[in-house]
Length: 254
Image (tube, rainbow, N blue to C red; front, side, top):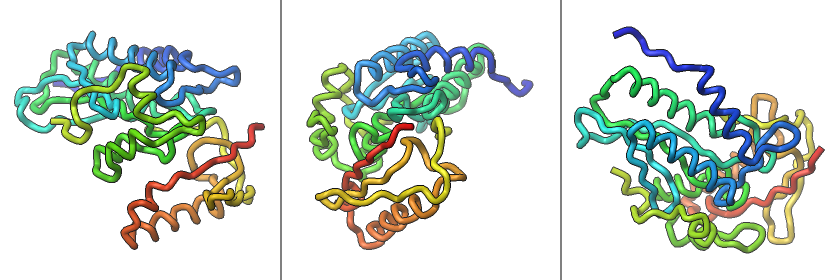
């Protein structure tokens, strides 16, 4: 068999289609986790995956798994994916490219009639960004055992809404327990080197200044490195609770 090639135009079209769900005037996306917009893009993803013959399951952290069987369905699946939630001023490809790219790869296999040896799953993780419920990667953290379900459920956003309540409200809490399941990061702009580091609030939480988004090659070292060093130090000391501690970001919009 020749190497399979995805349909790049089709992938681009779906990227632009999903970008309209929470699209902003400047061309980005504001699609915070567990909001009505998040529910809309989840519904979109479920419909596309089911149209390919996938079985879509959801765990109790809202993580979505679109599964296509393989020749040996008893084997652990080959997982691909990322997340569909965004930063408040996120770009069109942050997270969603990982999910839709995986979906397009799966669609290419289906259309070619190619059956993989192991099952394939396309995954949409909940709250990877952490923009609404800090810290980032809450659901994948529960999946990996870094956080407990009870802690994640009780975690509140700045408006006082609990993660669990928001998950229930959009109707995406599944019965399967998270962790028992058998991207490209970019932003509209990155702060230049030498940007202010920010300070701390009354509770001692770090309050950096700047544009929301992901660290990139031109991210300010003096802002990024201290946070990395703090996390590494806490990890070395076994400070599990410190690793979970909330970071509040004061974003200055340009």
